[in-house]
Amino acid sequence: MKPAEDARPLLRIAELAAEAGLPEGALNIVTGYGHEAGTALARHPGIDHISFTGSPATGAAVTKMAADNHIPVTQELGGKSPQIVFADADFDAALPVLVAAIVQNAGQTCSAGNRVLIERSAAYKPLLERLAQAFATLKVGPSRLDLDCGQPISAKQQRVWDFLSDAQHDGIEMAAHGEVVAEAPEAGFYQAPTLLRDVPPTHRLAREEVFGPVLAAMPFDTTRPTRSGSPTAPITGSSPVSGRATARGRWGVQRVRSGQVFINNYGAGGGIELPFGGGGAFGTRT
Image (cartoon, rainbow, N blue to C red; front, side):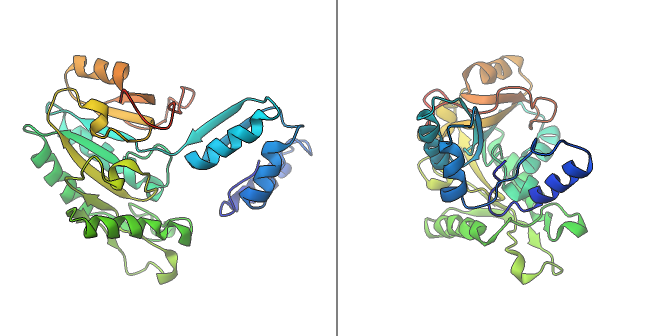
């Protein structure tokens, strides 16, 4: 196992595995930078299979390196997973799911629901208002406080601020945001969960993975949102469809191009054995 440079707790997992009696050599933690240790592993002729979790760009590089040795690669890459809400959805049931899908792990999840597509007729305005109320109550702070959202893993995640700066520059309205509590250390790179409304389908906030607690709300006007409201949105690992009509749920399963599709639910819990990754860099049927 080669963890990311910031994922130091995996070293503790190796210690626990040894204490539990796992045979020596069965689990090997290889530390180092991706361009050094990661590249060496991906190119090594003694490797029989690679499982990679990370960015699409690095995933493409890993696949090319593994191809030299003709070994299979399983990948879990980031994306722009849409949460699709129809006008007949149960808002009371959908609301906590919509929020949890973007604030869990401070939004640092490959399957984070970082876009919410809401049917405009009779749904967009009232649900957006309720989402804004929910976001305004979110608290962010150290893990010991067990609040709604924790901190990004490192200073590199300050890229979230770049997305929010672009949104402000381009006139995208902030519907609501949470609060970083006073107990949060200034050096923690904390980011308040943020809800943005009326995000244009062509904007980078509708196309690029933020990897932070930022939810982009987008309306759609038909009963079948074409390409998840964004013709250039990347393939998604997991997508929920909320609505009471079973026909719409079946449409979600059949038409959304995603590794997993949930109906009136969200998350890999109980379905982790199901296919996860999407296919291709950009959606043509989503």
